[in-house]
Length: 151
Image (cartoon, rainbow, N blue to C red; front, top):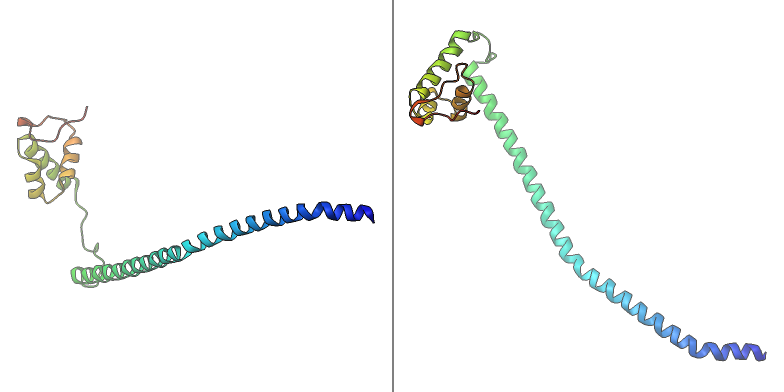
């Protein structure tokens, strides 16, 4: 038994130091958990705000699509009287398409402003620029008012 009493005598001071160290580590762990749990309400608040925002966005988008669909159906029934919008229409001939091209190109090359030609022809300015770029004769505009030519 003497060896058992020697081991017990040795462990008594070592056990108290080990218990103290384990207590300190435990207190540090509880402190870290406490700090992490303090952040949780703010995270829940942000998540709730995000959920509300996404829900509002979804509802608004759905209402917008429904309104747009209703308007498109209304416009289609008013202009076509229930028939397809393409029935009874003749496709434009190449001459009709070419006449606008000639008018646009000659107006811009004649020095008229692109914005004025676009307003008169009821098309976008970018379409006028495209028509000038696609001009088969690739003439340059007079007075520097037209669309710049690409090399």
